[in-house]
Length: 457
Image 1 (cartoon, rainbow, N blue to C red):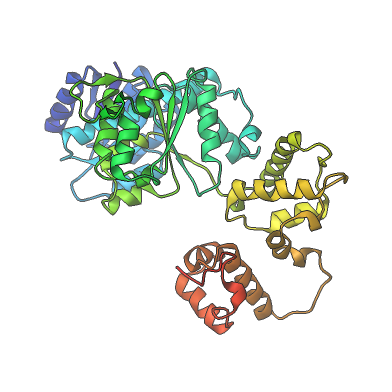
Image 2 (image 1 turned 90 degrees about the vertical axis):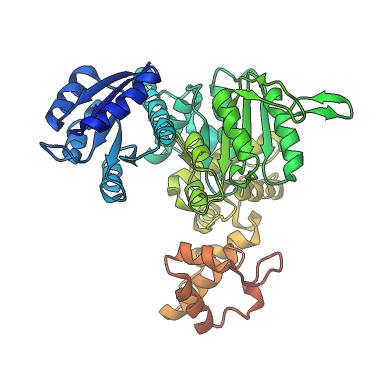
């Protein structure tokens, strides 16, 4: 049973919300003014606060600001069709916002998500959030943002009821983080099962996840049952077919699955971790992903930044960790990198992230066997090319020549994808196209990707 505070001067709204929460078994507190709400939060420490933006005595945002140190999870209630106060409240630390006419089912989902967030915060305060495994083990680094991410990973690992959602580009290490969450949790001694949502037809994925009663060899359990007491990783969950999204939501909420062709439901005790390279909120907006499933998955999403967005020291620590891991199976491989090799690695944008970095270092270790360190000549050609100016003597160039070279290399790094290149360069796609024409880059064979693709979107 959780303690929920409803703060509104609207008696009808108080009654409607209060009845809904009391039916769910929660302890409901009520406040009609901002000052009364602050006093109750100080004395009673509610887990979740529903805060109406229209209070009779003060601005609701002042209530939010004055109670922030008490760590309640706040859901702001806005007028119908007026999202601006809710957006501003979220910028100040509110969890989410709903309209006064919110459907009860949607409100229940939002509140359940807020309660899970409150439980995670309580766990953080109780445990001190000490990592049982260092962030270096996950190739994250030790900067303040990476330490915070590692702390969040530990919190989720120890929160059995929270679905973990890992968001990040291909190759950033989502699978390794998922395995770390599994290992740190009480389920670490049980099965870790992974399924890729992109590689199978709908019918095949349905049978693989949920099983069937009608296979040639008789009843066949699905992966939910195979992962019982353990963890199930759903890779690229944004690609999950629309017909399977309701079945996944039901499995998450009821902890039961029904095999194809069967009539009975099977209880499963599974921790689900979902991973995606796509923006699920945008998928919901585009009506490709169910909103209720998104809320169920996104209680506390973890965003894994690409290598190019990490600090130089984080990148160096990732390199050292990868070298230490790889050389264990390579007798005679060096344990160090030369300063020039590290400088080249730091200058390359790593579109393939940790996965690409690992491949480059593995090749370099093979070539450097018997030597004292990995040198620039042991690195892949594209890595050397991206940083060759760092090691070369000064050459007089005009600004336009430098710009042309930089745009050329950025396009190469992104396989000639203009949209991604423009994003990294910090310019609009239209501006990039203008520059490509101005510098006659579009027709040059070197601008095509290494796989032979031409310039594309």
